[in-house]
Image (cartoon, rainbow, N blue to C red; front, side):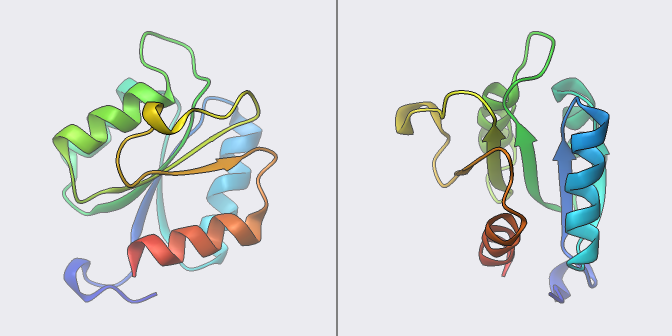
Length: 125
């Protein structure tokens, strides 16, 4: 999991408005050796990304309150920070291929931890 470019652990930004689901996602990533930042909505995520240059992956839920849902966040990340990898998730209807930013991965909820961690490792290594 070592990532020399960023001095050790790959940094993941978890974006989820539901506190229990956010904590589950954070715990899963931390137990796998990732350093985790958390955001409760898209504007908070954008603020963190603007303040940090070391985020390697964004794991975001689609269904969030406000004007920017997870798909719009993913599109903004792809436009503004092209090297950042993206995993999108939802318990609702899966987005179409045309709705997903290039290179983004979709994983349905409930999250299968093994599948999520496999995707995270594949994307950041």
